[in-house]
Amino acid sequence: MSSSTTPTPARSVSRRRFLGGLTAAASAPFILPSRTWAAEVAANERLTIGVIGTGKMHSGLMNNMLNRRETFVAAVCDVDTTRREHALNRVNQHYAEREEKQNACTAYNDFRELIARDDIDAVIVVTPDHWHIPISIAAAKAKKDIYCEKPLTHTVAESIAIMKAVHENGVILQTGSQQRSSREFRVACELVQNGVIGDISKVLTSFGDPGRWCDLPGEELEPGLDWDMWLGAAPEREYNSILAPRGVHDHFPNWRNYMEYGGGMVTDWGAHHLDIAQWGLGMDGSNPVRVEPPEEENARRGAKLIYDNGVEVIHGGDRGVEFIGSKGTVVVNRGRFELFWGEEREFVSVNQLDEVEAKYLPEGSKQLYRSGHHQQDWLDCIASREQPICGVDVGARSALACHLMNITYLNHAAFDWDPVNNTFANNTGKPEWTTKEYRGGWGEGIV
Image (cartoon, rainbow, N blue to C red; front, side, top):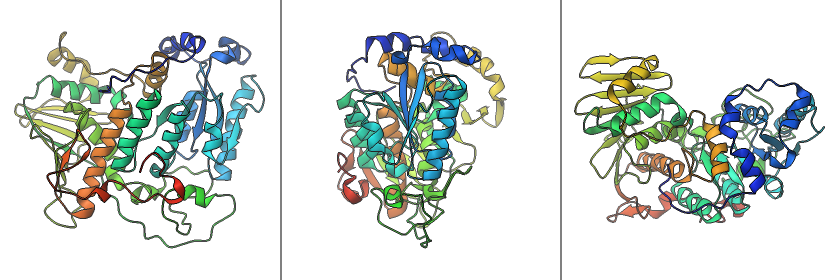
């Protein structure tokens, strides 16, 4: 949970009263006669949502909101005309089949028009990484609650800026690091925090290469894409379909490999696994104090994040996240859980988590935040105004750990870090490594 104690104001009484029953509603089946769907919830008590970004990743998130009686998708936004219209038609068809208002959803090219709507309560941000924070800060200032995909931020400076913006405006932000809402990851982190495997010496985290600078050639731009808006703060360059494939597609575009728009796999999958490393080590409110590159200058593995207790989090291994302790090792990945005592494996399956908890996490053991569903947790916290499982401080600091790792790779430099003041320490590092140039004024509130 967030370490912040900043109070958050409640929303309207009617909406809070209804949303207070979200958990119970989520566990109920969603099979209702279409004529009764809208009648279940008064229109002014539904959480009205805008979805910003309608590529591959938005689909599951938007479906989740469409298939809930207590949420209403009123707007979609994308700079690609085909995707935008596809999402719009999908939402309107869904509500038409439920015999609700016809053409209930509106589509936008510019997210600022969506955020400016007084009736929008919350936004889901599913854009390329370089757009996460300009959009999220604008939403926070407009008092909209936010679900933003991981990595929450694109630079160290953005991590600092979004924590400030969210706390100042009293909104609820959930980062899309959904591994925290999966039982195998929680149990693994509880074993670590309860000392079951002894003192932790290192954590191995398995994911792909750090980011690189974009060198793609220009291509002819087809009509229907606002390319300048897609670039946003990023440097001006010619269009390339690898960065922004046109239309409705079913793959994850490779803009994420390039530093101008993402951060390679260090921020893509690293945002998941380094997040779990921070959780298990109890470092949600902190970050490493030293960062070291691999010995070989061009190596793509081997960077280290070193915490103030001496634990090293290493970019390496091939099993997800491995917590290595003085008594044993816990290995966890999606759908995978293993507990070792030396070379001997005692538990080797997520199907044995009941046995693990019964044996090693008895009543009275330290328990971490429990979320059975990541988006539901966000909705519950919008109602309660409590911090969600991956609130702004958690998401920003997990992303910050990724950025520090990319910095050490890109510059092949070791440096000390002050996680309290979020700055380089002991005359190491360079301030310009923590930020970037923002084109077109998109850096407002960040730099």
